[in-house]
Length: 282
Ligand code: ADE
View 1: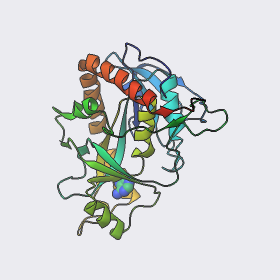
View 2: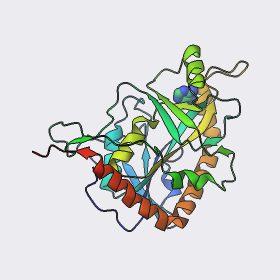
View 3: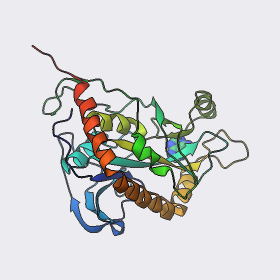
View 4: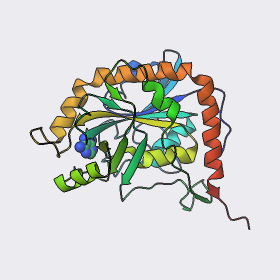
């Protein structure tokens, strides 16, 4: 699905993440309380500027963290971004590490994913009355994440890994020890509860998308370490909030510098989205 042509301007959507819904990081901001054909997004969207670049912020779990990963209205979140003309999206995700060398406090710009979710709407093309997307959409997942955005980490002066596979579980519970070890054997590097279906919905809309994991814990596989819990995750998110903001400001500068390349990619992503829809020719 890709109704409109890509505009000639970049507007970046950020889906976060404690700290990122802070309006103080924006200048000239306005709030949009939107309703989409898929329902209400998790929270009002904040639109403003960072260093002159138009930016829209959205708190994935709601301003009061009231939506569990299963109950986030991912489709409404992405549709609301589209309604505001956002054509590039970055997401931040607190995530557990499944590897010795990926340490809490570091960032991972993952390049692929494994989907273990079971209860989420994965497509805008669901054939439901009143929903705007016709036909059936089979969108390719290679590359899953936008490479130019992912590479915005290149000269980042913060500890990070520039690739990795993220596994997304349904939650809300954390993994058992057997599950954690299984995911390690499968080759996953980090684990979270929200990258799916965001990655697929972005592809269906033809919006280049990248996610970055802020590593908060070692899940429960690592002996001698504090196992994942709400306390462990929250402590780490709070103590790294400033660093996460710095990361996003850096990403915005890089996106501004790669504007022409990214606008080409916006057009290419829209084409892939459009060509992925099968419509009954009759
Ligand atoms: N989010 C942060 N840490 C996590 C973990 N270990 N598993 C799933 N989601 C997470």
